[in-house]
Image 1 (cartoon, rainbow, N blue to C red):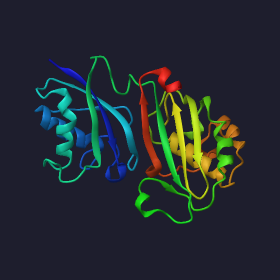
Image 2 (cartoon, rainbow, N blue to C red):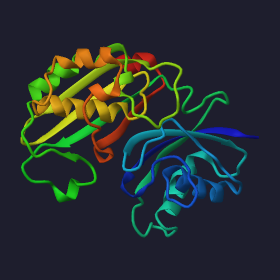
Image 3 (cartoon, rainbow, N blue to C red):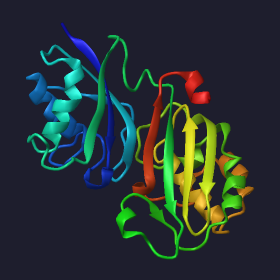
Length: 263
């Protein structure tokens, strides 16, 4: 009898060509499907909630798959992680992708379509010199950022808006570019690490990275904080700031409960 399984996954996106399976390149989806196909003794295809780009990281990616298999559900994560780490026990070295948990869910549950929202985190190293150990995990901005200006600008982003100005070309065409941002928080200080966390019911292609880049531009004094209102109303990508690099972006949380998300 088929079981529907929900996976919670974390990964360092540095050496992946993104989440989505692609021929002849290493992807997160491809690596997980390989080991699950071995474990379940049949071809497994998983459906992820977020198709993160190359270089983007995840703390709480979700994926589902359905199959009839013999291994106990509670053993899937342990066995998969052992294979991802090289197939030795203990693993030769930790992999850059790990299944945190596997659990059986109702047959009609889908990682993507059952989701009601997500939180993304964007990490900025705002120091005179880069941290070489964090070079693939943050955006280094050398000039001091005005965090107060970034916070002022961020206030215009929260709420329900048409985010067409913050959508990059190249993504899947969407029926609407209207989204709701429930919270956009910025914390940290100039000369140190600054973190942006954004929670919403959905995000357009590169929306979070464009918002991050635009807030950095506000922090650098390149655009007035109040101009965010005009940028949103313009519905024109050329009016917003630069696209912040993928390496600073993390999928931090996926929600299946609206009250939890809004809280």
